[in-house]
Structure formats: structure tokens, C-alpha cells
Length: 95
Image (cartoon, rainbow, N blue to C red; front, side):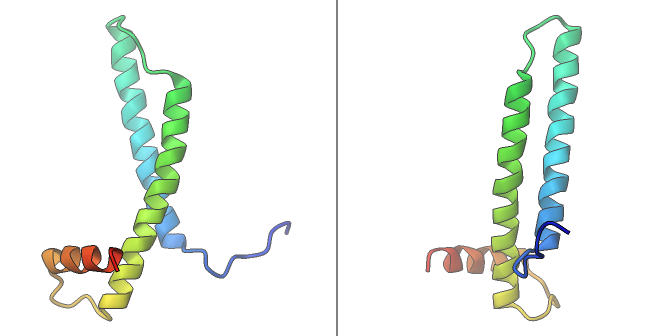
């Protein structure tokens, strides 16, 4: 209602970025609980929050680049070879 829909919004890339961030936060909070139980120094909550937000934006950009690279180099995923994809992704990122 308040915002216009963005035509360039890549929902699958954003979903992958959200999953990555939530897994990261879950692991960090689990490590923090273990450290609290052993009465060692814990991880700062501000660090957990800011690093998770940075991971969200970085992983969204990376997945968007990877998805764009896949769609521009291959029209279908038959006989998918990850090494060929990695080489073409590296070539496309430097051109």
C-alpha cells in the first residue's frame, strides 16, 4: 500500500539471503549460549545484529550475481557441471 513494487526485485535471491542470515544468527546465538554456560566472555549482541545485517545484504548481492551469471551463460541446467559454472562465473565477473 505504501510502497510501489520494484520490477527488479529478485525474490529467490532475497529468500536465500534470509535463510543464510537466520542460519548465521542461530549458530552465533548457540555459540553464545555455550560460552555463557562456561562463564567465558560472550559475543556482543550489537556485533551479532550488525554482522547479520551485513551478511544479509552481502549474500543477497552475491546470489543475485550468481543467478544472473547462470541465466546469462546457460538457458537450461541439463548436464550441470559446477566447475564449468565456477570458471564462467569468474570470467564474467572480471569482464
